[in-house]
Image (cartoon, rainbow, N blue to C red; front, side, top):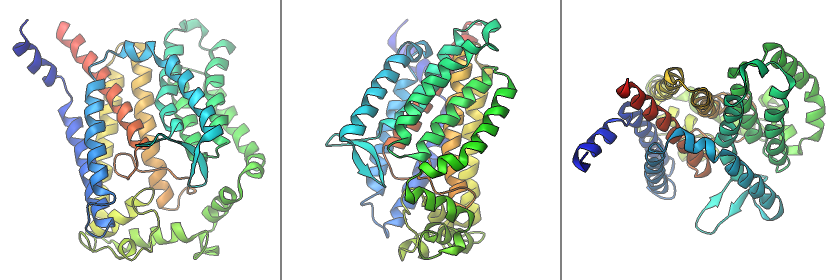
Length: 370
């Protein structure tokens, strides 16, 4: 087969509909960052565009690897990230009240973010190799639980509650889809609810404050409740079609904090209104629909669990951020994927998308052979 005939076939197998959705989300995010800086490409919009383009190219490159490659190297990646989490505990940089970062000079890396797709891979690989008759036995429960518990405790000690929650949700999703009995999850939820008072006593003061303010933000609208109060004002003032691009007041007058990261959605809705918010939600909904379709179409157990787990990992980013900025969940520092400014979270999401595209490419090859 000649190179000329091979290249078009490889390009044709790219999920172009997904790529257009990703570019739409990233481009819309770049416009919002441009506006948040008062109509300037610096300090956020230009770095976002460069980072987005580079990581999207990386995701497309990952799509050319076979899913088995990711399975083979999942435990090695898990071990490496555990080592990096230990290094973070010793010499990590502090940002946002959490010692979660490794300062590598040109970039600052957050190893806990990369653990999210890796935990999906190792647990999916474990259940893919487990005989069907063992799924309801104790041996099907404790290894994935231990694999999740070790990094979760290390991340919680940083302390980074938001990342710990996302890691746990991703792991539980794969365990549930693998076929573990429902009673285990119901019992676990009850145990978690009972442990909330104990967990609250171990929280840092600022984390306790976030929980209390979530329950009643009106008690301190100019202090601890300031973030969520201003977020609600920005969302509500956008109306149906918004105040217009570059015309946001909450963001431009700096009433809205963290407008380029965690609270970028309210800043965008203030300018683009309900229409802009629904457009962004629709783009994400189409992305999640594509990801679950990939999971349903694949034949291998590892590929199916991985595709569903990675899709839900991105969904948890999206859902928790929106619930947070609307006052329906405590503020835990979760960015809006592909839209907010930030490198580690975007890297994690692009890795997830790259592996999803790899599984999709493998599905298409199977159909071609068939």
